[in-house]
Length: 383
Image (cartoon, rainbow, N blue to C red; front, side, top):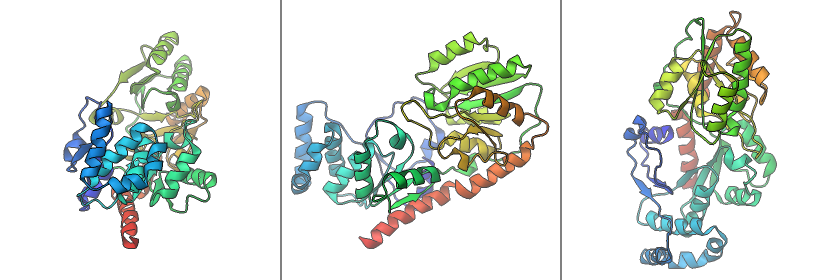
């Protein structure tokens, strides 16, 4: 969303094509600022829908293009193939010269096929689950990299990983980091610590976020006399398991799962916290966080941050300089990191000022949006 707003502010005309209707009842105020129209691309629910899809394609002159690409469409997942045709129809008679997709998953599959039908080039941003998860098909990802005008990814770690894995298909792969609208995250120096250290964590309650290791860390600290108030925001499949762990470890007076929060509520949580923790791990299915956006937001806002040495996170949380890095999947090291960040001997202000400077240098959404824009413009110059 920040990327779209930055591109619109720079004068670009954006249209949004969504494969799924929204399923989040919470309204984020930033959405009201987006001017881009949104078109929802239908999926077929019955055979007649499929036939209507072909009729619509014929009506806008795509019959020959469908015939040329029939083998590709037939080899694709049925929903992807039909959505690609519907997207191609939606793109006709619109002055759209480039498609960009986030995540090298189903949405990029649809864009790749729609590009083959219409001739409109596509690009995509590779994040994490679309790279590292065991379910990712190497051949599918290679084809997407080969056929895209260009691709981008969000960290040097990802860039090196993809270049090692696909040496012949990544000549047009670039680093473009996640961007933040820094106006939304004004910096302030961390406040002096009180008698109780307020710790925040935010993310889906899933394995790769590592909250299952944060709870024993909290128990270890409390057993040692450390006064702690931990709030974890988010929902997910591990909610019941985490609640059971809180009860089993006797953490109920000190740890709360506060559920889903709006962007404004997350900002309030960060503003009221002394430490932010992102205890990320690599999941049993290979899934890992690429670069948690809320970690960048906390660093931008001046909250002292602790995270783990997973994927690209050490590129931003530089141990002892912009935050503290702990060993992943180790509650004892997380406890030690929280204790160290709370120690009078730790220069929390220098860390947070260094963190803000790094975020301003590498994650300003205006700069990242301009990088994306320049890549698309380069495509138009050679077209």
